[in-house]
Length: 479
Image (cartoon, rainbow, N blue to C red):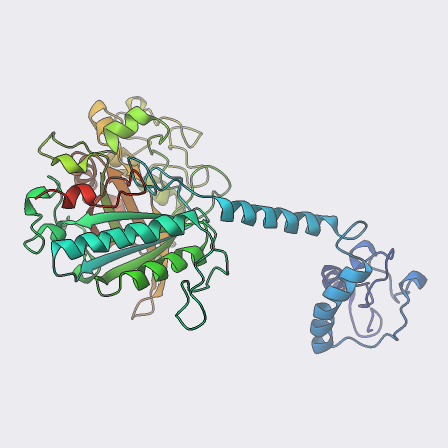
């Protein structure tokens, strides 16, 4: 091995020693016998480097080239684990972290949310890490076939969210499951939330008289740049789980079961970022997103803000327990945003980027107290948080339950980054809540850096109450 005084300076030697330490080797680059200090415990020796007697190994030392170092590090990973061990007296930190990660994965896989109830899961459910939003155009030819389609979606969603072992159909038939998640399908916090679009209530199925009162095709707001090929749809499935493969497994399973009954119109996958360092997760502009959400544990607030009631405000009876579901694919022009000063960014949002606190306060969840800043000297009058929620009695009734995800679609045809926010929210009254807030946000300073390009208005169906119930039964039972 080359040493200081033999063609290698002290700094380079130290880097080599540290690399050996990470591989579980001695400073000399050899496998460390049990009880012998590894490279990270050996001081960088003076020139020349003495080799400790305790570090002797049966094999002679040879100069360690790049290829030898790489292959040695891989091989020594196993060898050192046996010699030094990732057990008692070895590297307990690594073992502890690995065990903790395994326990977390196991707990995640066992997480399940109740499928039956007055409301669908995936609305007030804590947001999972991964999601896929798929809008479909139905291709069934009759109302009876539409009912069969919704029954099939219900059956597959019920089974997938519960988890378990797929049926054994023998060796001559196609397998009952794709096998993506292995022989036992984990629940993994999966939820499948089904919503209907305005187009389902056209002439095809005789449902025009049962359309939710405020459900319509999403309008183009000022500052929108909607691509109608990625908007709207007869049905929307919001599929969420803790892991990507669980989401993809569910999408694939439902697509297989419903083939011929509906066709994908558009799809957008999303992901949730972990809290960094704490509190509400961040969007891809770097700011916390969803701080002002109402509490899902406050049932009175959920009844007021999220759940729609039938036979009032012009709503048909069957909508009770459902919710208006808005999805907006909002592209963020991050290359331009990243060139804006942090002061200007914070002024546009109205919050400190690091803490998420209003510019007038110190904690993320502090009330911004606009009454103490009536002329917008600190939080500008057109700051996003001030327009979205001016903290008035009227604005309190306009709150919606936001459930957003980030998305990354790679690059567009011009080589620009294509990423942004997959905005999703639920509310009892589309016009009183989302539309009213959106109108206040027209021409806010942030519109130079974001552009809504897709999505739609939908109505999340009431929940499936028991094993004999199915999604949309209340709707299709009426003429």
